[in-house]
Length: 147
Image (tube, rainbow, N blue to C red):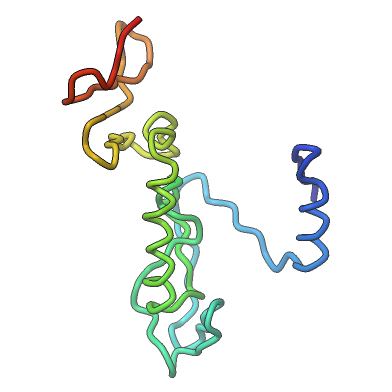
């Protein structure tokens, strides 16, 4: 497998490769068909290591977050408790990506509208005379200035 990166990341990748072994690789299907899942009785959580007799596997956690446009890859190796725990990080990631998520859409059918933490700025992807762009508005005077 070839990995392409910036020269500044090479030492980090070497350290990562030394400490971790590739167990499997996931490629989302083109037609959004989900792969068959293991029976609940055969599942083991990859995070806490618990089996189905010690935890539950009722939710359908995504292998790659829906935040990035994945609608088909569902995990059968993440228990409900760990899924609930890590879902909080997804909200933080969405907040971190902010406007970038709205502009790039990341696989979403309809790009999400970005709202600043204080609600003063709203931005969304829009079309202007056939060209794609970003519509940015503010409900507060002086926040956005046009040159």
